Length: 96
Length: 378
Image (cartoon, rainbow over all chains, first blue to last red; front, side, top):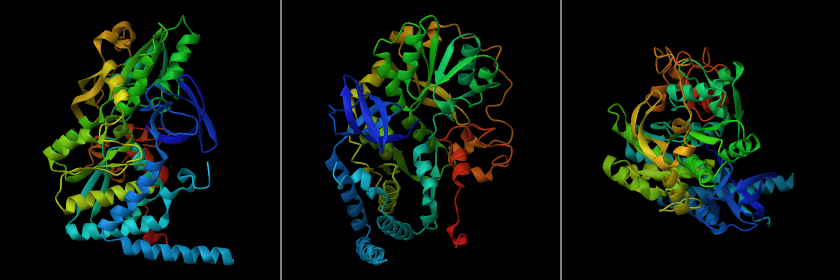
């Protein structure tokens, strides 16, 4: 029961919200969420309760953090090389 | 949402970033210069690790081990007996699906169902309260399992003035207490810990600072996507390499230092810590969460007579013969070292608790094929 899944709020009725989880809709309770939630927000679901409103800018922050960890660990060059490889691969897809 | 919606782009599964992180990890472990072991304490982490085959990209010399991260697995036999006795005594027992087959000293709740007891599987404690509302003449007991993240949900329902025929049989556990048990175990060689992101969403990452300072082991809070986990292990090995026993939050999109304060308030208003036996491990100081005395009206143990004498086998060992779940949960053994694993002990007929729950190490390894050796796959 420990799986926490992010979903997007599509409707709110008092302490109950309808949340879309990648196409599956479920009712969630809002009793214990950390801050006020509005339609369009992402929330982290745990056993039918929203436990966290996920600010969109903090998703970007996590992605930036990965790059920062890579930089400190001296892997930035690898990532740039990977980007180039990725672009080459994408080009191949387009060509085919 | 636009096409730039980060949740839909699945950036957290970008294979190029994953490769770069794996390379960084190899360099960190080479710099440490000796084999090291790190532990995570969460079934959801193990599911991601096993499902995405992350151990196959870990460098030689790094062991990533699952500790006591499955609240179902550590629920003790006599605790299950209480629920079984209630179900057979005429109460309607509601619980999460993975509790159904968990063995008591003699019977599981699935066995109790077979003997005529009424047991409902629910997705949420809110559903259990709704069932009580629809059946006012029946005692409805919610067998409440899970770590503190799940206990918060139970507490929230307690605060909503649920129906008078509704009560709670708490077998909730408190995960920071379990990390102490592992760290204090003289046999352990764990040098760093990944903390579970969802538990930390509630408690905040600050709660691990005294632990890191006292044990000298760094702690990194990790999310649940493959990149979250790899990035967290890179950070953890970096802290180990630099001998910095600090706490680092690698899951900032969900975890803050202080955590979810309203949820913490809700949790401690309803529950208090108590010493408790964790199956196969030990008595864990402050490891159980019990309802506070002022909530006795909602506490199944105080409100209903629970006589387990007919369902309890006092001679039953805490673990079945040959089962090594306890050693597995302490990170001292792996499922493949157990002679029962995949033979007598299977998901459809579990012998040990770790094979029962979808969050148990044995069950996860059995489902996803353990640790694949990609060199042999070609």
